[in-house]
Length: 221
Image 1: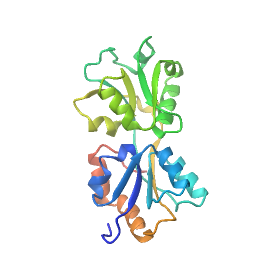
Image 2: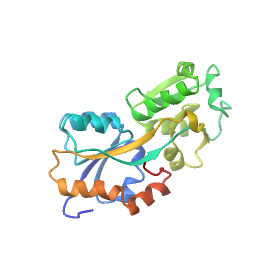
Image 3: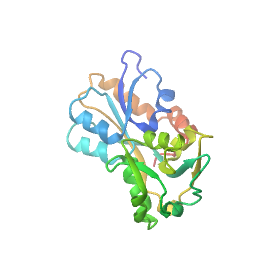
Image 4: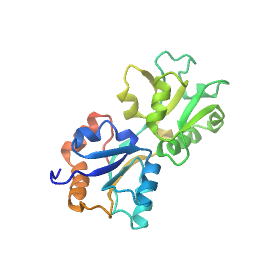
């Protein structure tokens, strides 16, 4: 990146581990993409916005807040349970059992919206009755399950990989998966537009893409 400017990058919580590996000298704010988008709309000083969906950056683009978003990676959803798996969950369909404590992302948080798509695609809308907590970002879902405070939760594949040994994973068939695409955009109010554009350009370059692949993210398309 351009060393003369330290960028403030607002990025989806699921990028917490990988972005500092790609560009270690920038200043990061990781949270739910919807919360970050709202902060940018309200004038928070950010140079770059990286979202776990395309919807939020596109909305900001239509409002004239950011430059045209670029898709830079993809992900997929997975179900996680505590390593000890006290509820004995071995399939997504086991989430229907009475008393299962499920934690998911809230409505509007990309992982929460994607979770609802998965459940609907599997004919499991009724499972929402077992939700005990709706979280503001995917890392909170991850924490509650890995600490044993919930029986199961839906996170991104990359999040599950970041806590190997603390959770067990249950795959979701590809036909039920939502399209999980991440988009990044330069914030128009940035005082470092050239550096911000360089950051975005670097994200789709070979070096950054290799680090995203290593972290479990999927090729952008």
